[in-house]
Length: 163
Image (cartoon, rainbow, N blue to C red; front, side, top):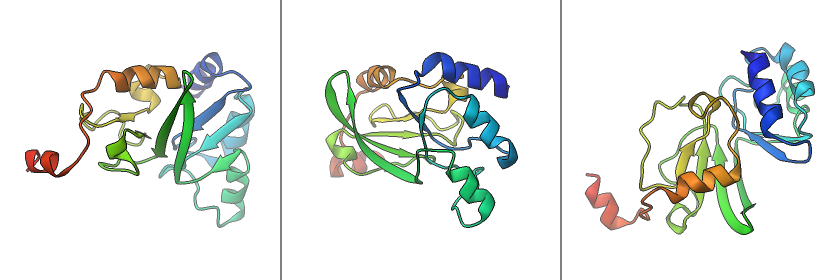
């Protein structure tokens, strides 16, 4: 399984791309360096999950964090998707509301293995490989997914509908 996932990453991501990994990189930290070395993408940003050694308080966790170009439990980025600026919030865990969610920012998460029902009115998506063809999703593919949603900003009117 690990070999298949690494092969899938290497088929999907070029060396000069940025790969955002939304956690649970490896259950065994002693294997993490070997796995990371096999991923051709040079810039791998980790949003740690509950199975990653984090925070980096001990030597094993520090060595693990050093494998990545950046490690943070919550990231907010303005990414360029097909020439347009897109605010994105990345976290291992799903959120119902996130920074600028009512202004069209995206929320990408993992952890739930496709077990959370999608909210077709929210611009969020479970990007875990186990519910996305066992491969990373490109920003273009995520834009297509988000474009297929019936986005409704979460305001008082929508809050009243959910009660």
